[in-house]
Length: 197
Length: 171
Image (cartoon, rainbow over all chains, first blue to last red; front, side, top):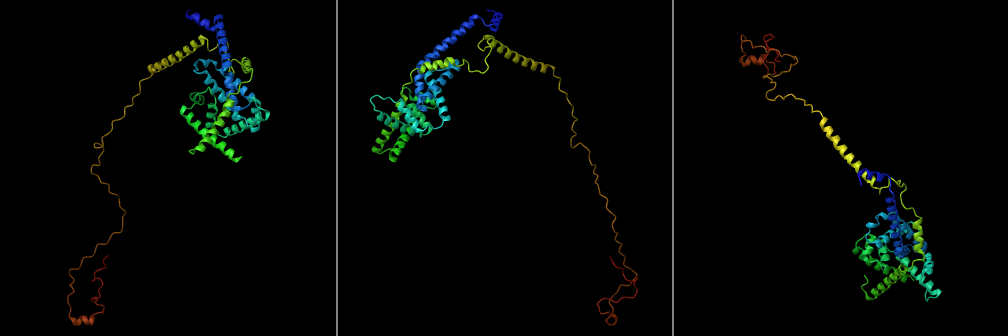
């Protein structure tokens, strides 16, 4: 192709390039749909562990994928899509949590009673379990932010300490030391609560 | 912390309680149809996050845009270089102002040994002291008797009575 032809081709979009563009867009859409199928559940659980509300967690997941859609040009540069997506949704839920007012513990109890697996449990046992979990989660909320974040992410079986460090943007040794401190603080808090009762 | 075995046991049970709850929360299943809803939201979302989208022919992906940007950069760089070159060519030689040679300090104007003496104001002139009269006999020792009779009693010699013969007041 001569230079003049190239310039003309640049000025007037040829049907071939339009077809290529359309094909590329479809490929990107398919890749994004595959990512949704693969990671939406994990992202939802991460979001729910922070927000503790089903609708809010679902909104956060949708927002995370919309952000991915807007920046899909950079998808090729991402090494680990799973950790990258968890980091996106983690930032979204932290932002939402910061803006939202503190949820009362009763809200947590009712929400947990709704979502807890109820196999082999009576209604009373289910309510007691929900109350216990809500009480533990209230203690978790009293932890310092750094320790709380590490403790919550460490509960996800699929996340290693290296991946937690990548999500939080810290070193792996920091993750370990924060996790140790979080466990100690958590034990102290629960003991203190028990002694008060 | 928690060095006591009992305390350590309590610590482990407490932390395991917390982690058990967090694991339970983390393992809750996602609601049914989540993926479909997310896909629907994605298809409804705008494709581009820009407020102002590029026109079809001005899309950044198209090659001519890149070519035009490269040409603009080359034009700016070459134009700048040419401008600098032209300015250097047309510049006038610097005007040289000859400074007068400095006079050496030792060979300059000399005072020729002149010493300036300031004028003094006319002041009072002291009168010349009168000379002693050589014709007048010098007062010598007088006999004790006459001194006793003519003395004034002040211990000073008695006046001769002629004021002109006496020396004037010395000033």
